[in-house]
Length: 511
Image 1: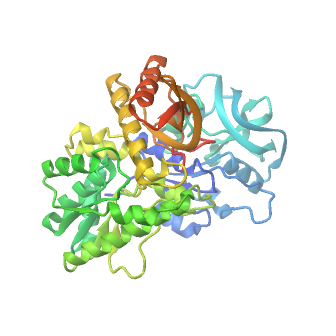
Image 2: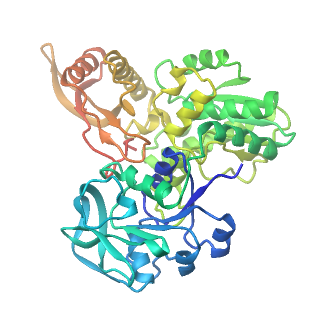
Protein backbone atom coordinates (compact mmCIF):
# COMPACT_ATOMS: atom_id res chain seq x y z
CA UNK A 1 0.00 0.00 0.00
CA UNK A 2 1.32 3.43 -0.95
CA UNK A 3 0.55 6.14 1.58
CA UNK A 4 0.37 9.85 1.05
CA UNK A 5 3.76 10.96 2.31
CA UNK A 6 5.18 14.22 3.60
CA UNK A 7 8.97 14.26 3.32
CA UNK A 8 10.95 16.10 5.98
CA UNK A 9 14.39 17.28 4.81
CA UNK A 10 16.63 17.29 7.87
CA UNK A 11 18.98 20.25 8.30
CA UNK A 12 20.20 19.11 11.69
CA UNK A 13 17.61 20.18 14.24
CA UNK A 14 17.19 17.88 17.24
CA UNK A 15 13.47 18.54 16.72
CA UNK A 16 13.42 17.14 13.16
CA UNK A 17 12.08 13.74 14.20
CA UNK A 18 9.30 15.48 16.14
CA UNK A 19 7.97 16.92 12.88
CA UNK A 20 7.58 13.41 11.51
CA UNK A 21 6.09 12.27 14.82
CA UNK A 22 3.45 15.01 14.88
CA UNK A 23 2.43 14.27 11.30
CA UNK A 24 2.01 10.60 12.12
CA UNK A 25 -0.08 11.63 15.10
CA UNK A 26 -2.34 13.16 12.46
CA UNK A 27 -2.39 9.80 10.59
CA UNK A 28 -0.20 11.27 7.86
CA UNK A 29 2.81 9.15 6.92
CA UNK A 30 6.10 11.02 7.06
CA UNK A 31 9.74 10.16 6.41
CA UNK A 32 12.93 12.06 7.27
CA UNK A 33 15.38 12.37 4.36
CA UNK A 34 18.85 13.93 4.02
CA UNK A 35 18.79 17.49 2.65
CA UNK A 36 21.07 16.57 -0.25
CA UNK A 37 18.60 13.99 -1.59
CA UNK A 38 18.59 14.35 -5.42
CA UNK A 39 15.55 16.19 -6.69
CA UNK A 40 14.84 13.30 -9.06
CA UNK A 41 14.48 10.95 -6.08
CA UNK A 42 12.03 13.36 -4.45
CA UNK A 43 10.01 13.67 -7.66
CA UNK A 44 9.86 9.88 -8.04
CA UNK A 45 8.34 9.59 -4.57
CA UNK A 46 5.68 12.20 -5.51
CA UNK A 47 5.23 13.48 -1.95
CA UNK A 48 2.06 15.23 -0.84
CA UNK A 49 4.27 17.88 0.76
CA UNK A 50 7.81 18.71 1.84
CA UNK A 51 8.97 20.26 5.12
CA UNK A 52 12.38 21.87 5.54
CA UNK A 53 13.46 21.38 9.15
CA UNK A 54 15.28 23.66 11.53
CA UNK A 55 19.00 23.41 12.10
CA UNK A 56 21.90 24.81 14.14
CA UNK A 57 23.72 26.58 11.31
CA UNK A 58 23.36 30.02 9.75
CA UNK A 59 22.57 30.11 6.03
CA UNK A 60 25.60 32.38 5.61
CA UNK A 61 28.01 29.87 7.21
CA UNK A 62 30.54 28.16 4.99
CA UNK A 63 29.35 24.61 4.50
CA UNK A 64 25.85 25.33 5.78
CA UNK A 65 23.51 22.52 4.69
CA UNK A 66 21.30 23.24 1.73
CA UNK A 67 19.03 21.46 -0.73
CA UNK A 68 18.42 21.62 -4.47
CA UNK A 69 16.57 24.92 -5.13
CA UNK A 70 14.35 22.97 -7.51
CA UNK A 71 12.57 21.68 -4.39
CA UNK A 72 10.55 24.92 -4.39
CA UNK A 73 9.09 24.01 -7.79
CA UNK A 74 8.73 20.26 -7.35
CA UNK A 75 4.96 20.52 -7.63
CA UNK A 76 3.85 20.01 -4.03
CA UNK A 77 3.54 22.43 -1.08
CA UNK A 78 6.72 23.24 0.84
CA UNK A 79 6.90 24.43 4.47
CA UNK A 80 10.10 25.88 5.90
CA UNK A 81 10.58 25.80 9.69
CA UNK A 82 13.17 28.05 11.40
CA UNK A 83 16.41 27.32 9.48
CA UNK A 84 14.18 25.95 6.72
CA UNK A 85 12.44 29.34 6.52
CA UNK A 86 15.76 31.18 6.41
CA UNK A 87 17.01 28.84 3.68
CA UNK A 88 13.84 29.39 1.65
CA UNK A 89 14.10 33.16 2.02
CA UNK A 90 17.80 33.14 1.15
CA UNK A 91 17.32 30.92 -1.92
CA UNK A 92 14.39 32.92 -3.30
CA UNK A 93 15.85 36.41 -2.97
CA UNK A 94 14.84 37.46 0.53
CA UNK A 95 17.22 38.88 3.12
CA UNK A 96 18.44 36.89 6.11
CA UNK A 97 20.45 38.68 8.80
CA UNK A 98 21.72 38.05 12.34
CA UNK A 99 18.92 38.87 14.76
CA UNK A 100 19.55 41.93 16.98
CA UNK A 101 18.26 39.77 19.84
CA UNK A 102 18.48 36.01 19.55
CA UNK A 103 15.22 34.22 20.34
CA UNK A 104 15.45 31.00 22.30
CA UNK A 105 12.50 29.72 24.26
CA UNK A 106 9.01 31.14 24.45
CA UNK A 107 7.98 34.03 22.20
CA UNK A 108 4.68 35.71 21.44
CA UNK A 109 3.63 35.68 17.78
CA UNK A 110 0.87 37.86 16.32
CA UNK A 111 -0.88 36.71 13.14
CA UNK A 112 -1.29 39.74 10.91
CA UNK A 113 -2.97 38.37 7.76
CA UNK A 114 -5.20 35.44 6.80
CA UNK A 115 -3.21 32.34 5.85
CA UNK A 116 -4.07 28.67 5.33
CA UNK A 117 -1.57 27.61 8.03
CA UNK A 118 -3.41 29.65 10.65
CA UNK A 119 -6.99 28.58 9.95
CA UNK A 120 -8.87 28.44 13.27
CA UNK A 121 -5.73 29.55 15.13
CA UNK A 122 -6.02 32.56 17.52
CA UNK A 123 -4.54 35.90 16.45
CA UNK A 124 -1.88 35.63 19.16
CA UNK A 125 -0.11 32.44 20.16
CA UNK A 126 2.80 31.57 22.44
CA UNK A 127 5.43 29.68 20.46
CA UNK A 128 8.81 28.00 20.87
CA UNK A 129 11.62 29.83 19.08
CA UNK A 130 15.24 28.85 18.57
CA UNK A 131 17.15 31.05 16.15
CA UNK A 132 20.04 33.49 15.94
CA UNK A 133 19.18 34.76 12.45
CA UNK A 134 15.92 36.16 11.17
CA UNK A 135 14.30 37.08 7.87
CA UNK A 136 14.76 40.83 7.52
CA UNK A 137 12.87 40.95 4.21
CA UNK A 138 10.64 38.28 2.65
CA UNK A 139 11.31 37.27 -0.98
CA UNK A 140 9.29 38.85 -3.77
CA UNK A 141 5.76 37.48 -3.98
CA UNK A 142 5.63 36.41 -0.32
CA UNK A 143 3.22 37.94 2.17
CA UNK A 144 4.21 38.47 5.79
CA UNK A 145 1.47 36.75 7.77
CA UNK A 146 2.87 36.86 11.33
CA UNK A 147 5.31 38.91 13.38
CA UNK A 148 6.88 38.86 16.83
CA UNK A 149 8.64 41.45 18.99
CA UNK A 150 12.06 40.38 17.69
CA UNK A 151 11.13 39.09 14.24
CA UNK A 152 9.46 41.28 11.62
CA UNK A 153 8.78 38.12 9.57
CA UNK A 154 7.67 35.35 11.94
CA UNK A 155 5.73 33.63 9.15
CA UNK A 156 5.44 34.17 5.41
CA UNK A 157 3.39 32.66 2.59
CA UNK A 158 3.27 32.51 -1.21
CA UNK A 159 -0.01 30.61 -1.78
CA UNK A 160 0.29 30.71 -5.59
CA UNK A 161 3.54 28.72 -5.40
CA UNK A 162 2.34 26.72 -2.35
CA UNK A 163 5.32 27.93 -0.31
CA UNK A 164 5.01 28.62 3.41
CA UNK A 165 7.45 29.29 6.23
CA UNK A 166 7.56 29.74 10.02
CA UNK A 167 10.38 31.12 12.15
CA UNK A 168 9.16 29.10 15.16
CA UNK A 169 8.73 25.37 15.82
CA UNK A 170 5.12 24.10 15.55
CA UNK A 171 6.31 20.53 16.21
CA UNK A 172 7.38 21.29 19.81
CA UNK A 173 4.67 20.90 22.45
CA UNK A 174 5.59 24.29 23.92
CA UNK A 175 4.06 25.99 20.83
CA UNK A 176 0.37 26.72 21.33
CA UNK A 177 -1.77 25.24 18.54
CA UNK A 178 1.37 23.83 16.93
CA UNK A 179 -0.37 20.59 16.00
CA UNK A 180 -3.25 22.57 14.49
CA UNK A 181 -0.76 24.46 12.31
CA UNK A 182 0.78 21.20 11.10
CA UNK A 183 -2.72 19.80 10.51
CA UNK A 184 -3.57 22.84 8.43
CA UNK A 185 -0.47 22.24 6.32
CA UNK A 186 -1.00 18.48 5.94
CA UNK A 187 -4.76 18.49 5.38
CA UNK A 188 -5.65 22.01 4.24
CA UNK A 189 -2.60 22.77 2.08
CA UNK A 190 -1.28 19.34 1.02
CA UNK A 191 -4.67 17.64 0.76
CA UNK A 192 -3.77 14.63 2.92
CA UNK A 193 -6.63 12.42 4.09
CA UNK A 194 -4.96 10.61 7.02
CA UNK A 195 -4.57 7.12 5.57
CA UNK A 196 -1.79 5.85 7.87
CA UNK A 197 -2.80 3.86 10.95
CA UNK A 198 -1.12 1.44 13.32
CA UNK A 199 -3.20 -1.39 11.86
CA UNK A 200 -1.85 -0.63 8.41
CA UNK A 201 1.66 -0.42 9.85
CA UNK A 202 1.35 -3.91 11.35
CA UNK A 203 0.21 -5.40 8.04
CA UNK A 204 3.04 -3.74 6.14
CA UNK A 205 5.64 -4.66 8.79
CA UNK A 206 4.63 -8.32 8.62
CA UNK A 207 4.89 -8.21 4.83
CA UNK A 208 8.33 -6.57 4.92
CA UNK A 209 9.64 -9.09 7.45
CA UNK A 210 8.45 -12.03 5.36
CA UNK A 211 10.08 -10.55 2.27
CA UNK A 212 13.34 -9.84 4.13
CA UNK A 213 13.61 -13.08 6.07
CA UNK A 214 12.36 -15.44 3.39
CA UNK A 215 12.92 -18.95 4.71
CA UNK A 216 15.56 -17.85 7.23
CA UNK A 217 15.55 -18.08 11.01
CA UNK A 218 15.41 -15.13 13.41
CA UNK A 219 16.57 -14.59 16.97
CA UNK A 220 15.01 -11.69 18.84
CA UNK A 221 16.69 -9.76 21.62
CA UNK A 222 13.95 -9.71 24.25
CA UNK A 223 14.41 -7.16 27.05
CA UNK A 224 11.00 -7.46 28.69
CA UNK A 225 9.96 -3.96 27.70
CA UNK A 226 7.20 -2.95 25.33
CA UNK A 227 9.56 -2.30 22.39
CA UNK A 228 11.15 -5.74 22.14
CA UNK A 229 7.86 -7.41 23.08
CA UNK A 230 5.98 -5.74 20.24
CA UNK A 231 8.84 -6.44 17.83
CA UNK A 232 8.79 -10.12 18.82
CA UNK A 233 5.02 -10.40 18.39
CA UNK A 234 5.14 -8.85 14.90
CA UNK A 235 8.01 -11.11 13.84
CA UNK A 236 6.29 -14.16 15.31
CA UNK A 237 3.23 -13.40 13.21
CA UNK A 238 5.46 -13.10 10.16
CA UNK A 239 7.68 -16.18 10.52
CA UNK A 240 6.10 -18.34 13.23
CA UNK A 241 8.35 -20.97 14.76
CA UNK A 242 11.37 -19.74 12.81
CA UNK A 243 11.69 -17.10 15.56
CA UNK A 244 13.56 -17.78 18.80
CA UNK A 245 13.54 -15.08 21.50
CA UNK A 246 16.58 -14.73 23.74
CA UNK A 247 16.43 -12.90 27.05
CA UNK A 248 19.75 -11.98 28.65
CA UNK A 249 19.99 -11.16 32.33
CA UNK A 250 22.73 -8.53 32.19
CA UNK A 251 23.07 -8.16 35.94
CA UNK A 252 21.85 -4.54 35.96
CA UNK A 253 18.11 -5.17 36.00
CA UNK A 254 15.70 -3.95 38.64
CA UNK A 255 14.69 -5.89 41.75
CA UNK A 256 13.39 -9.39 40.85
CA UNK A 257 12.95 -8.28 37.24
CA UNK A 258 14.53 -11.27 35.52
CA UNK A 259 12.16 -13.73 37.20
CA UNK A 260 9.13 -11.54 36.51
CA UNK A 261 10.01 -11.22 32.83
CA UNK A 262 10.48 -14.96 32.48
CA UNK A 263 6.99 -15.61 33.89
CA UNK A 264 5.38 -12.93 31.72
CA UNK A 265 6.77 -14.23 28.45
CA UNK A 266 5.82 -17.78 29.17
CA UNK A 267 2.23 -16.48 29.16
CA UNK A 268 2.73 -15.00 25.68
CA UNK A 269 3.81 -18.40 24.31
CA UNK A 270 6.83 -16.91 22.56
CA UNK A 271 9.73 -19.37 22.12
CA UNK A 272 12.18 -18.15 24.76
CA UNK A 273 15.78 -18.94 25.72
CA UNK A 274 16.74 -17.46 29.11
CA UNK A 275 20.43 -16.65 29.67
CA UNK A 276 21.89 -15.58 33.02
CA UNK A 277 25.00 -13.62 32.02
CA UNK A 278 24.94 -11.27 35.00
CA UNK A 279 28.37 -12.31 36.29
CA UNK A 280 29.98 -11.69 32.89
CA UNK A 281 28.41 -8.24 32.50
CA UNK A 282 29.39 -7.14 36.00
CA UNK A 283 32.94 -8.36 35.39
CA UNK A 284 33.11 -6.24 32.22
CA UNK A 285 31.75 -3.21 34.11
CA UNK A 286 34.20 -3.51 37.00
CA UNK A 287 36.06 -0.23 37.49
CA UNK A 288 34.31 1.50 34.55
CA UNK A 289 33.03 4.97 35.49
CA UNK A 290 32.64 6.79 32.16
CA UNK A 291 28.99 6.71 30.94
CA UNK A 292 29.83 6.04 27.29
CA UNK A 293 32.34 3.35 28.28
CA UNK A 294 29.60 1.66 30.33
CA UNK A 295 27.19 1.70 27.42
CA UNK A 296 29.79 0.35 25.02
CA UNK A 297 30.91 -2.37 27.42
CA UNK A 298 27.32 -3.52 27.85
CA UNK A 299 26.67 -3.34 24.10
CA UNK A 300 29.77 -5.36 23.24
CA UNK A 301 29.03 -7.98 25.89
CA UNK A 302 25.41 -8.20 24.75
CA UNK A 303 26.54 -8.98 21.20
CA UNK A 304 29.06 -11.52 22.46
CA UNK A 305 26.44 -13.36 24.51
CA UNK A 306 24.02 -13.30 21.63
CA UNK A 307 26.59 -14.68 19.25
CA UNK A 308 27.27 -17.59 21.57
CA UNK A 309 23.61 -18.36 22.20
CA UNK A 310 22.66 -18.06 18.54
CA UNK A 311 25.45 -20.49 17.64
CA UNK A 312 23.80 -23.08 19.88
CA UNK A 313 20.62 -22.80 17.79
CA UNK A 314 22.34 -23.81 14.57
CA UNK A 315 21.97 -21.71 11.43
CA UNK A 316 20.40 -18.35 12.31
CA UNK A 317 20.21 -15.63 9.68
CA UNK A 318 18.71 -12.58 11.39
CA UNK A 319 18.89 -10.76 14.72
CA UNK A 320 15.74 -8.81 15.62
CA UNK A 321 15.79 -5.84 17.98
CA UNK A 322 13.23 -3.40 19.31
CA UNK A 323 15.17 -0.34 18.14
CA UNK A 324 13.05 2.83 18.02
CA UNK A 325 13.42 6.00 15.98
CA UNK A 326 14.56 8.18 18.93
CA UNK A 327 17.36 5.64 19.59
CA UNK A 328 18.54 6.10 16.02
CA UNK A 329 18.25 9.89 16.00
CA UNK A 330 20.04 10.36 19.34
CA UNK A 331 22.84 7.91 18.61
CA UNK A 332 24.30 8.79 15.26
CA UNK A 333 23.88 11.47 12.58
CA UNK A 334 21.77 9.18 10.42
CA UNK A 335 20.27 12.05 8.44
CA UNK A 336 21.19 15.64 7.84
CA UNK A 337 23.45 17.31 10.36
CA UNK A 338 22.00 15.99 13.62
CA UNK A 339 24.57 15.75 16.41
CA UNK A 340 25.03 12.63 18.53
CA UNK A 341 23.62 12.92 22.05
CA UNK A 342 24.52 9.46 23.35
CA UNK A 343 25.15 5.99 22.02
CA UNK A 344 22.53 3.26 22.33
CA UNK A 345 23.57 -0.34 22.82
CA UNK A 346 21.19 -1.53 20.11
CA UNK A 347 21.99 1.04 17.41
CA UNK A 348 24.77 1.14 14.88
CA UNK A 349 24.78 -2.31 13.34
CA UNK A 350 26.53 -5.55 14.20
CA UNK A 351 30.23 -6.47 14.23
CA UNK A 352 31.45 -7.75 10.88
CA UNK A 353 32.24 -11.14 12.40
CA UNK A 354 28.54 -11.76 13.00
CA UNK A 355 26.89 -13.52 10.11
CA UNK A 356 23.41 -12.34 11.08
CA UNK A 357 21.60 -9.39 9.56
CA UNK A 358 19.47 -7.00 11.58
CA UNK A 359 15.67 -6.93 11.53
CA UNK A 360 14.23 -3.87 13.26
CA UNK A 361 10.49 -3.65 12.60
CA UNK A 362 10.01 -0.64 14.93
CA UNK A 363 13.01 1.42 13.80
CA UNK A 364 10.81 4.18 12.37
CA UNK A 365 8.36 4.37 15.29
CA UNK A 366 8.13 6.46 18.44
CA UNK A 367 7.31 5.00 21.84
CA UNK A 368 3.63 5.94 21.95
CA UNK A 369 3.20 4.54 18.42
CA UNK A 370 4.73 1.27 19.60
CA UNK A 371 2.26 1.16 22.48
CA UNK A 372 -0.59 1.65 20.04
CA UNK A 373 0.78 -1.19 17.90
CA UNK A 374 0.88 -3.33 21.05
CA UNK A 375 -2.79 -2.66 21.66
CA UNK A 376 -3.53 -3.44 18.00
CA UNK A 377 -1.79 -6.79 18.48
CA UNK A 378 -3.88 -7.51 21.58
CA UNK A 379 -1.03 -7.16 24.06
CA UNK A 380 -1.98 -7.01 27.73
CA UNK A 381 -2.14 -3.49 29.12
CA UNK A 382 0.57 -4.31 31.69
CA UNK A 383 3.02 -4.62 28.81
CA UNK A 384 1.70 -1.66 26.87
CA UNK A 385 2.03 0.88 29.68
CA UNK A 386 5.35 -0.34 31.08
CA UNK A 387 7.63 2.66 31.57
CA UNK A 388 10.74 2.82 29.36
CA UNK A 389 13.86 1.26 30.84
CA UNK A 390 17.30 1.92 29.33
CA UNK A 391 19.12 -0.94 27.62
CA UNK A 392 22.18 -0.50 29.88
CA UNK A 393 19.79 -0.76 32.82
CA UNK A 394 20.82 0.41 36.27
CA UNK A 395 24.40 0.84 35.06
CA UNK A 396 23.46 4.32 33.78
CA UNK A 397 21.52 5.10 36.95
CA UNK A 398 24.57 4.51 39.14
CA UNK A 399 26.88 7.45 38.60
CA UNK A 400 30.47 6.23 38.71
CA UNK A 401 31.53 2.61 38.96
CA UNK A 402 28.98 -0.20 39.17
CA UNK A 403 29.45 -2.62 42.06
CA UNK A 404 27.20 -5.32 43.51
CA UNK A 405 26.86 -3.25 46.69
CA UNK A 406 25.75 -0.13 44.82
CA UNK A 407 23.38 -2.18 42.67
CA UNK A 408 21.76 -3.59 45.80
CA UNK A 409 21.22 -0.08 47.20
CA UNK A 410 19.74 1.25 43.98
CA UNK A 411 17.50 -1.77 43.40
CA UNK A 412 15.83 -1.36 46.80
CA UNK A 413 15.48 2.42 46.43
CA UNK A 414 14.07 2.09 42.90
CA UNK A 415 11.57 -0.56 43.99
CA UNK A 416 10.27 1.83 46.66
CA UNK A 417 9.85 4.59 44.06
CA UNK A 418 7.88 2.23 41.80
CA UNK A 419 5.66 0.99 44.63
CA UNK A 420 4.75 4.46 45.87
CA UNK A 421 4.25 5.95 42.41
CA UNK A 422 1.93 3.08 41.48
CA UNK A 423 0.07 3.34 44.80
CA UNK A 424 -0.77 6.99 44.14
CA UNK A 425 -1.83 6.37 40.52
CA UNK A 426 1.09 8.25 39.00
CA UNK A 427 2.78 5.35 37.20
CA UNK A 428 0.76 5.76 34.00
CA UNK A 429 0.61 9.55 34.31
CA UNK A 430 4.35 10.05 34.01
CA UNK A 431 6.72 8.95 31.25
CA UNK A 432 9.33 7.58 33.66
CA UNK A 433 9.91 7.54 37.40
CA UNK A 434 13.00 6.05 38.98
CA UNK A 435 15.88 6.45 41.43
CA UNK A 436 19.50 7.35 40.66
CA UNK A 437 22.40 6.57 42.98
CA UNK A 438 24.88 9.44 43.21
CA UNK A 439 28.59 9.09 44.02
CA UNK A 440 28.04 11.60 46.82
CA UNK A 441 28.16 10.82 50.51
CA UNK A 442 26.95 13.22 53.14
CA UNK A 443 26.55 13.42 56.89
CA UNK A 444 23.29 12.37 58.48
CA UNK A 445 21.87 11.42 61.84
CA UNK A 446 19.88 8.26 62.47
CA UNK A 447 18.83 7.67 66.05
CA UNK A 448 21.72 9.07 68.07
CA UNK A 449 24.37 8.05 65.58
CA UNK A 450 26.14 10.02 62.90
CA UNK A 451 25.98 8.48 59.41
CA UNK A 452 28.01 9.10 56.27
CA UNK A 453 26.08 7.52 53.44
CA UNK A 454 25.03 7.85 49.80
CA UNK A 455 22.56 10.27 48.22
CA UNK A 456 19.77 9.09 45.91
CA UNK A 457 18.04 11.31 43.37
CA UNK A 458 14.43 10.74 42.36
CA UNK A 459 13.62 11.42 38.70
CA UNK A 460 10.07 11.63 37.33
CA UNK A 461 9.25 13.22 33.98
CA UNK A 462 6.22 13.84 31.81
CA UNK A 463 6.62 13.42 28.06
CA UNK A 464 4.78 12.35 24.94
CA UNK A 465 7.64 10.65 23.12
CA UNK A 466 10.81 10.94 25.18
CA UNK A 467 12.36 13.51 22.85
CA UNK A 468 11.39 16.41 25.09
CA UNK A 469 10.31 16.11 28.72
CA UNK A 470 9.38 18.19 31.73
CA UNK A 471 9.89 17.22 35.35
CA UNK A 472 6.75 15.86 36.94
CA UNK A 473 5.13 17.86 39.73
CA UNK A 474 4.66 14.88 42.03
CA UNK A 475 2.65 15.66 45.18
CA UNK A 476 4.78 16.60 48.17
CA UNK A 477 3.14 13.90 50.28
CA UNK A 478 4.18 11.27 47.73
CA UNK A 479 7.76 12.56 47.65
CA UNK A 480 7.83 12.62 51.44
CA UNK A 481 6.75 8.96 51.65
CA UNK A 482 9.34 7.93 49.05
CA UNK A 483 12.08 9.79 50.91
CA UNK A 484 11.10 8.46 54.31
CA UNK A 485 10.88 4.86 53.14
CA UNK A 486 14.22 4.89 51.31
CA UNK A 487 16.12 6.47 54.19
CA UNK A 488 14.55 4.10 56.71
CA UNK A 489 14.55 0.89 54.67
CA UNK A 490 17.73 1.14 52.57
CA UNK A 491 20.77 1.10 54.84
CA UNK A 492 23.46 3.05 53.03
CA UNK A 493 21.33 5.95 51.75
CA UNK A 494 20.65 8.87 54.08
CA UNK A 495 19.69 11.72 51.75
CA UNK A 496 17.12 12.09 48.94
CA UNK A 497 16.98 14.87 46.31
CA UNK A 498 14.41 15.48 43.56
CA UNK A 499 15.52 16.27 40.01
CA UNK A 500 13.63 19.27 38.57
CA UNK A 501 15.48 19.44 35.23
CA UNK A 502 13.68 19.36 31.88
CA UNK A 503 14.83 17.86 28.57
CA UNK A 504 16.33 19.85 26.96
CA UNK A 505 18.74 20.99 28.35
CA UNK A 506 19.09 17.85 30.50
CA UNK A 507 18.48 14.27 29.37
CA UNK A 508 15.98 12.00 31.09
CA UNK A 509 18.61 9.51 32.22
CA UNK A 510 21.54 10.86 34.19
CA UNK A 511 24.08 9.04 32.02
